[in-house]
Length: 357
Image 1 (cartoon, rainbow, N blue to C red):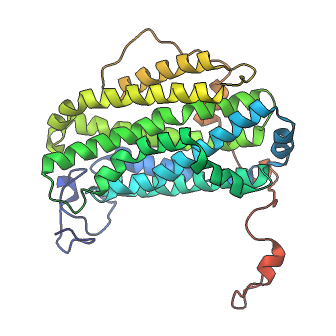
Image 2 (image 1 turned 90 degrees about the vertical axis):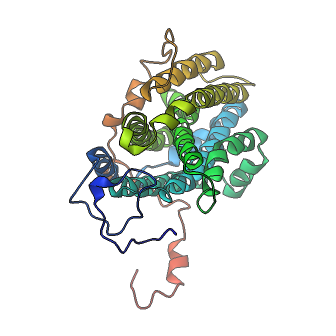
Image 3 (image 1 turned 30 degrees about the vertical axis):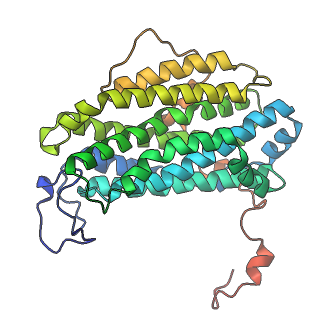
């Protein structure tokens, strides 16, 4: 029977990443896999708040956009909101099976940052649109987004169902492995059409505040992607983790999952650009980019991949995609109070037990 706290003293150096003995005291003096402790530290060093970015100009930019540009921007924003909602709840499905303290801590921090991302999309929506409810409601009305949501949540739902099931250890291992691959694909591929569109708008001096926020989100997602790559690398190669056979058996399904995701993102690009393009970016270029991205990501986790693909948008995207170039501090951006949470009058009416606002 599983327990939230193991009353027996266990050796953390003998614990596998998954399906070992239940964890007891969270201790960080003995580290089996330093990469996860380092990743956790890097995530915490990157703390930021969306309110640090001013969006007043973005609101005016949006009003002056063509209908086609508004469709591309809004569709991507809704899609990103859905994806981060999924991953924010998807990452904790792994925690049920994690038995390594530094990986557990890393995943907890990861979830926290996904929450920041979800708050960021709400912040953008509240500042750019006159009625945020229409945008959020539109997520559920968009068949293309819901179709992708069904695919994105499948492995998390399957893994959740195994937490208290009577599945064999091998079946559980396979589902854990495929769920990590699914998370990797979400972080590695599914966000990037939307990211590139945001950066293309900013290159045209439109919605720059939004792009600054997306650049911060992309910086976080790069760490999350690296996290999944390191987990898979360990499971693929270290025998004592007990996943090497499972990894080989899952290889074909993992490749199919990558190919399906790439095709879905191409379809998304076609959907976005059905009535026109953005200056400097079109459907054909995005299709080429997705092919290059898919096989680059497969290579990174040891899956078979094809060569011959090139990144068609390297150059103008470099500064936007470079995670190390991101700098945000309150003094760099005026913090707006436009439609963020409650107004001061609302706060004045609340009872905070004597606390002065």
